[in-house]
Image (cartoon, rainbow, N blue to C red):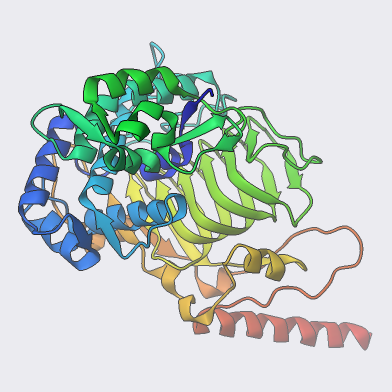
Length: 470
């Protein structure tokens, strides 16, 4: 029976981000070695991770970086593997750190404008660190690449080239390639790889793709690596690269909205389920997707408003400028964004990384007659217990190149990175609907925003009463 192995794109879309450390294989293995040597267990609690990774590991993380890594890694582990997010295995941490190298392996063209905002999915992408804080804000290049062959080929090639390092990681053989790899050790790579009898029929365990490994319970590392490299491919059935049409419900699990300019885009029906929503390289658009979403990536957009319902796992805004995002997401991450506003409800403090400046944060404000059911289906019901989580971001933005790599973010730097929308300038966003409108979602707002909303509603009622008397 034939077997295929494909790369889990969502891990690289959402799990790779910029911090002060420029990861290399030597740094990853040095970090894992000191991490392993500093704890008696191969699993870590959050508190243990925060202590060891910031004080004993080499290179050491800042507290903000350690918190950001833990949050994203644990959310991905829980969503993909199903393991609870209150503990992480050292091997899982190692796999995710190896994935951080992918930013250095993107396909690049010969030249790029240094003043452009970095979009790694566009031709000519350069490092975001070439746009230091305080540099001129350039215009965003509008290149309608979406998730094309450049990105998919680069990701598959990276995985094949680094498979040996991944096998070293899951066996914790940090000094040399292991002689053998067990079935259990190889299955740990199920976080980043998935196996199937076909591209639309997944197997329960990654090791089932290699019958010799299952029957013998272990396999020579070199033989296993060669066998797996032949099987790795891109899964077009799950991670399609085709652009979507507004009036059609996606046939694949992925919905791509790419390369649009000066358009309004509606996704219908509202009760659809989308595994992977990618909004890429859109300029001066208004995009409405009021469906249940698992992962959402917003990348390389400019001057665009994105209005979403519930994202049950992770929403990432990446390399955007002058964009307004309205979303209720379990976890939200923003990287390399300039002058971007986010109206957010979240269960976990949002993460702000990379070269991010001029960000505005505010509570979620979308009104739609079916939004309550959409949020419930996404497990993102507006619970008052999380009413102000959005206002406490984990901020590990990139500093100037000559700054100390492990310096902590000062209060002044935080203020230049983000601030809050003033309650007097906070307004709800109403999603257009066909036919009669039902009861709108009741927003859950912090007291100061709720009070400002009620005052404006009272002012409107007074004006309506005055007009009725004319």
